[in-house]
Length: 526
Ligand code: KIV
Ligand code: ZN
Image 1 (cartoon, rainbow, N blue to C red):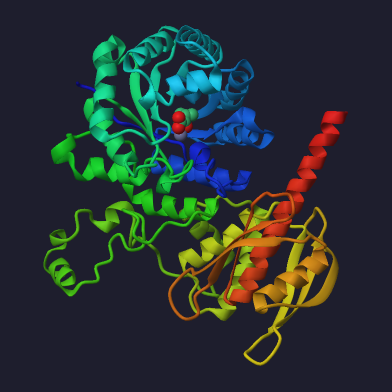
Image 2 (image 1 turned 90 degrees about the vertical axis):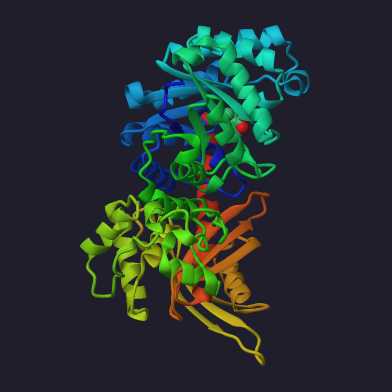
């Protein structure tokens, strides 16, 4: 094998976003897409355009704005899907890719599709051929490939290549594969399809983590001839997630002695920054002990280890933390920092904010700067996030006062203002609520004021940065009576205030979704 370039195909914005509770709005997706391009991923799978107008718009805007990476749109083997994907990626020109998929395993053929093998082959070839009328670059995925009969898989791949696909992705859709077995499947395809040997077509792999083997399976596939790895930042994705980009990249870089010297386009120093951005934008926080990007990944607590590290870092560290972007934070900002400093730090952190958003973030920054000596990068990220996730703000928190204690009934007085579409306050409303605790009391007061009744289903709080004056960041999920889980985020030096902000964020999101749905019904009726 002479091709030593590994293509990194990132599907954070498609498979990652499919993860329950992870859905991102357009601004959030744009920030992530720009950062993925800075990270150096070769292909960004930006979404599944036919699924919704929002998905189409996101793929289209990413294809219009994001430079360097190829932009892919997913499509079932269905004409309207392929058409939508082709239109959505069109602004990327030659960097546009359509990714067509069709299930091939016996269980999917018989129980999901009701199709025989020859029908599947025909459909796959037709889908790829249709996609080729719209773009040069077509990828085909036989869904549930790892549970498909290997010889049938060879036939499907051949048909897709003959129809014009140049990337053949072999998904382990349900995370069923075992590294040695997956190696043999990929090798079987490589040995039996001449286009893989000549480099005319490329084998890709897409592994899910149901057995915790997604990264191991992806690496085994490289040894068998795969040259594209599909993965997500922080390993987010359907169910137990996808192979984690950061783990794949760092395994290949760190163990060149084992894998050989593969070429990658990834700028590894951007990894931690990208991980944090994705965690914030998706609302899925990273577990502390997560490899490479978890807060404990390079923390040494035992005395023996600390002693070893001080004598020679490599005694207990296989990666220099700076190589993946740890320890590269800049001096914290203070209340004296100006708008330009805040704007440039936001850019450095990967956020793309409009002038309006910057004005709002800067005013929150000043409020927080008055209460806190230093505003760290993570504090700033928590503040900006509140604005990127507002869609748009209908209600805005103006004032909050709580009384609570062991011998008193927790009570909250809340004043909120209703904003018009120019974000100018039109009217203020004030009310009070009592509850089981100060947070409950504040949320009840908000319910009375907004006349929206939410059920709090998940509530998470964490300190964003260091010190006793650290910002508290609250992430919640609420159900407003339609069975949908609506996320909300908020930050503040006071945790009751952060909770109220997070709840209002969810209320605003819920109201925005309802307006959008109503608009859609009106448009369709006209
Ligand atoms: O897991 C899977 O099979 C997929 C395909 C659409 C590639 O996500
Ligand atoms: Zn998948």
